[in-house]
Length: 448
Image: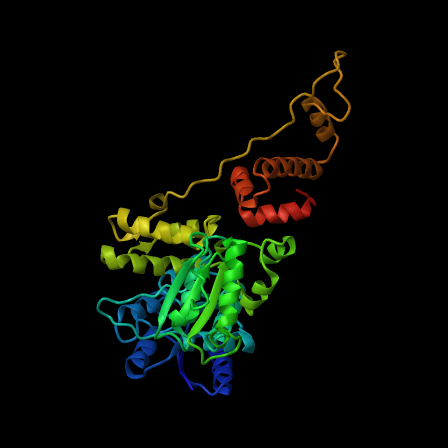
């Protein structure tokens, strides 16, 4: 049972929320303004707060700032409540910057409430105030990362082999470390093996007998066929410690890959038997650009991490937070981490502005009209070619929307061709977000 505080002047909503939380066997108290809220916070050790952004005396943001300013409850999970997804967007972003745990739209369903409470209560809340260690967690509140969070919890309860897949920079090693930290082997070492740079001698039959703890095979798809065979033999020679579901062993295997291992298996580049041996519990990480407001929580965490060397952590302005959300993040979490480390060093003041981020803007793609086709000596283009004038005549007979669609398709096809099919690069060339490009590709049925 947890102690929960609801700070909201909407008595009807508070009553329903309180009744729901009590049905979950939690102890609930309500406050309709900031004065009552801080009186309760000082006298009761709450485990979780639900906070409306609009209060009768001061804003919910000010209440959140007050909570974060007090040593006693500065790490208390606070869930922000808003009337709709489009209401107070800037304030919601600011709340996430201030360390709000999550954001919910009124009215919230029982399942959503149960989920956010479970995640909030599982979050470590006590950290040393002096020389505070601010752990960076890639787990967040977006649907994809909620699923990852569930799988991480499942992985931590057993010794099953885990396969973490995701694009370069999505944080595979950090997720592996999180699993190790919460597993029964957490008191032992976490060892990283770079599969792209290891010698042929490493996987002798006694390899696993020499280690205790978690071994993370980074980019397992880069192993040569010879090393794949050696690794499989080593696993077979030491089965007790690596058998799926066994929680008594002294070694657990976690692998990471940015490659499509199923395709490598199909082409014979990766051993099928080794794949199934390592892929007992698969975890797939989404690109950073698809994680929504979780990105801001990570950015703040990276700023705290960097502050261990630079002093007090820097803060993101509302404009810079918005710029981070709009960036395409082709380098994923690694790009965000490097950027936050950079601005922590380069920005002299306490607040990071948009100009400090120096985010590269996509290169605009000019209206690409095909060049005039070669002629056959008669002034007429060869069969299969349209010159620029012909294209303009074609567009002229279309209505406005059809013409725009035609131009869009031409531009996207050209950008994808020039980018060798790389969507992130094509989006940069076009000067549009990656999600919009993906949507337009589907809309125009473009194949590449």
